[in-house]
Length: 65
Image (cartoon, rainbow, N blue to C red):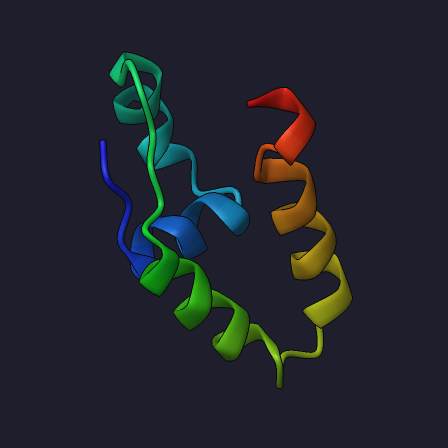
């Protein structure tokens, strides 16, 4: 499954309606453009630090690939 920016934002916000769909996916991908849009969008957010922490936890690190 390829996520768009809205999908990524919904996951970050804990939207439970996506949970069944995500559970069925064999692989989840977020294109670099989506990640850039998300990071740009959270720059002005009052919850910026929380979103940045969530993103760092959600993205696989280089050592886990």
